[in-house]
Amino acid sequence: MPSPIHRPDDPAAVPRNPPHACAGAAPTVLKVVIAGGFGAGKTTAVGAVSEITPLSTEEYLTEASADVDSLTGLESKRTTTVAFDFGRLSLSDAPTPLELFLFGTPGQDRFVDLWYDLSRGAVGAVVLVDTRRLESSFTPVSFFEDIGLPFVVAVNQFDGAHRYHPEEVRTALELPAAIPVVTCDARDPNHVAGVLLTLVDHAMNNATTSRTGHAPSTTLQDA
Amino acid sequence: MTTYGRTAEESAFVRTYTLTRGRTKPRHLLGLETVLEAGPGRPGPAQAEECEEILALCRERRRPVVELAGRLGRPVTAVKVLVSDLLDADALVVPLTQPYADTGAGSGPSTQLLAALSAGLKRKWPDAVAYPQAG
Image (cartoon, rainbow over all chains, first blue to last red; front, side, top):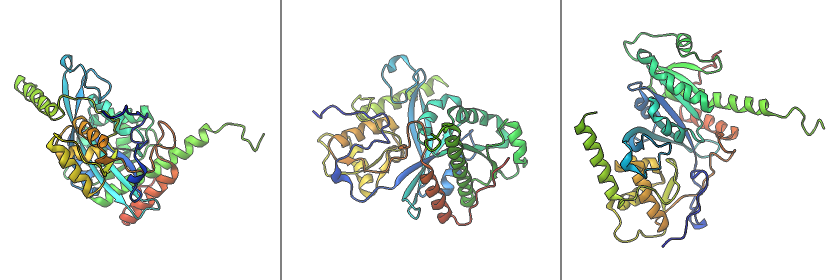
């Protein structure tokens, strides 16, 4: 029997591997969550920049449970299936070799458990908005606001749909001025990459602001 | 949902956990994005066919748990159970990588990593532009 396993707090952050396994440094993994209502274009957006065809991945969620991994006591619980999209791209030309994982996730609030899982350690989130179904964006927007994950709102410009000005969408979603609202064509890789760049800029601004915001009033130099 | 639909979902669930021989909890704590690569070990006897598929995929290149689940068409938890078996046999290993979450619990990647990501995206899509910060 194998020996008991050490369980780190964050499995993704603490690799448990023998040193011989390290054949060539693995790129650093970063991830971005793309959330939106049904038909908002999440799979299209993931596919526009992903190096692989977006994969639809399934997980079982138990309705009474807060932990996606806990499937014990199933007899008494309803099990539902949640499907989400996965795509990835390598940025080997980046100053540090990076791999970016993209997760497209459904916007309904019964998937909040999955969002927690996906948001942990993420760069941030893109809330993809279809202006014909604006109400489906409220849940992801308030979720990311609540957990303090940097996010941007991207309005997917569907052919034939009425074009709203981003500021109209900002007002409708009651978004603070600091949250970037942009329009994009989710089919266009340059657009989606532009949305990702906007998110990264926003996340960097957030990181700088929160650092200064939490700085003690008296520094060592002052003392 | 109809009675029929519910039954179908439950029977898919039962099929899935036949694959893991009834186990519903992976022995290793694995994240969706935990990356795996093929190791020196051999899988034990009487492993599910899916274990060979996982190994074949990871021999081609490193792949995260979520991608293996998507390619196998199996739920993430079931794949984590199988991956745990393969980790115990050293048939899979988690490559040493700079963890994205090393700036502290609950926080995102460091500003250095974000800057690298920005530079990497710009190099890959020179025509893409960050939208000017609104507000």
